[in-house]
Every structure is written in C-alpha cells, then in structure tokens.
Image 1 (cartoon, helix red, strand yellow):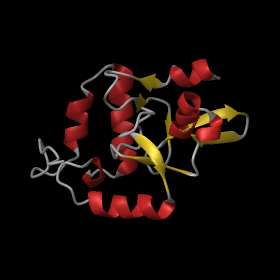
Image 2: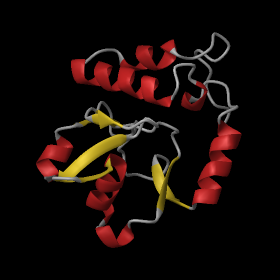
Image 3: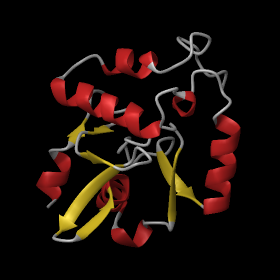
Image 4: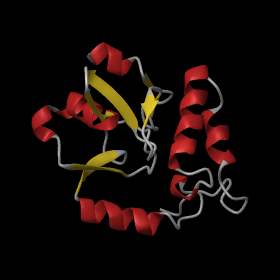
Length: 142
C-alpha cells in the first residue's frame, strides 16, 4: 500500500510541493484507495505515513494552497481546525498569484497539474496558465 501511494507522488524538489498524480476529487485533492470501497484524501495518508497515525489531526491545512500537495513538512501541511482553515482560505484567495485564484477552478487546475506531473511536463507553466494576467509571475510578499 505504501509503495502504491509513493508511486503516485511526484517530487521535483524536497522543499517544494510534491504533486499527487493519482485520482483527483471535485475539490482538487488527491484521492487514494486504501482498500476496496475505502477511499481517503491522499495528503492525509502521506501525513500519517511521515508523522505517524497518532499525529494525524482532524483537519490538515495546506499552507502552500496547493490541494494536490503531499509534502508533509510544515509550510505545506499542518494541523488546523475547520474554522481556521476556512478563514485562511477566504483571506488567501485574494492574494495575487495564489493557486486559490486560478480561473480554471480547483478540480480543473489539479487535473491539469497532475497530468503535467505524470508526463514530466512543465508543471510551473501549467500552474501559471489559469491565473489572471495580473497574477502571473506575482510572488507573495511574505
């Protein structure tokens, strides 16, 4: 099961987002079949794999705002609450250059990024395609 999970994670750089290359949910998160009829959000499996099942919080937040990201390090995935996660999403979706502003929507963005990662394509270029012209090439101030 672990080998199957890891085979669907594309790691271009240890410090950057590790993209899921398997099935994608309607909200752009990776979906991982643990066994027949039992599907979980892929980044939850990866976080538990890296930190232990006992360390798995009720809510995991993507600090990178990339729903496909599987990188279990702080800054990418961290413990949160539903309320805090929603509040941070509402605030950051207005940040220029944020993946949350992608005009394609979260599922279509995730599908295109997944396909680029699978094919060994230019993931950064694909990420920029759905951003409004004002957002392209913008870097966060903090």
